[in-house]
Length: 413
Ligand SMILES: *Cc1c(COP(=O)(O)O)cnc(C)c1O
Image (cartoon, rainbow, N blue to C red; front, side, top):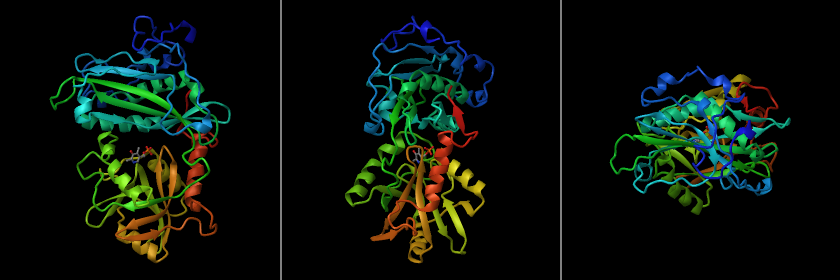
């Protein structure tokens, strides 16, 4: 198939020369449009169609970065996926083309009013050399949820996944080998209208870039300390904290720097007079404790609209519920409860969960002038993670790397 494609290094110049892909990978796509109903709200013209995908390969492939040298989010593969949308015509032709700069007008609405949302998922290489995605349908569902609030165009997630698969196949030499290594995939949508008016966008761009990355903790787990921020709030009821919109992140950097200056690695976000726990940095939060009633319980804050509905969060919940070994709850928990549990020796493990790190163990929390210790593994003084945290980490990676078969793991080829 590749040999049929005309090669051109010109960004966007491939439209005339590139051919529509109608190879084996895309032939199965016609007809099904599961999310078409959801898409009809904003989308008036053509639906997003993977079958229309065009591919124009770069003429200047880059040298691979040795995998030991990969720092998260710094290296990008050779190609990207782009698709333009206009209110008049709907989705245009999706294209795989050379990774490179976009040309946007300074008045473009994304620059002024943060009309942007994104996703983060990974492609993993299994022991047989095959490439796998982890629950990509969940990312597409969440992106459509972000898009909805921004009033940007929705799309059929299954169609975009087919295009992402083709992008990963195209750049498969960029998927590093080894457990802990992966190709991070960043779908993004921006409004592209050239106007300073604050109103719904009449044009948008969906693009997907990919970035090879190594394990979050190259030398094994490293527990992090948290600073409970009493001043700044990440999200609030009725806000957009449950959507992966860029606007949620810029404002978190100042508090993060302040926490670092005080000697803590991440911000613990809370809300309200009682300091109800929300998230840690850009991860969902899990607490394993012996609750006030003496039960062993894994708690995570509920999806009340202020918390990002993590794919990892959802996976941890389903996995641990499947074990059936202790109580698993989505419910509110506040800093006073955490402090008391710590003082009384009932706090067992705390970890953050997200695609980038899988899980990150927490070893202490600063709250109102005091540090509350979270034990790691009491049986192993040198440990950086509690036994349940470590077990969840391994279990999720086993699925992501195809060691343990699961419907969550989707083969790219
Ligand atoms: C992306 C993100 C998460 C984790 O979501 P995953 O789907 O598990 O990667 C958690 N919290 C915030 C604020 C996030 O942006």
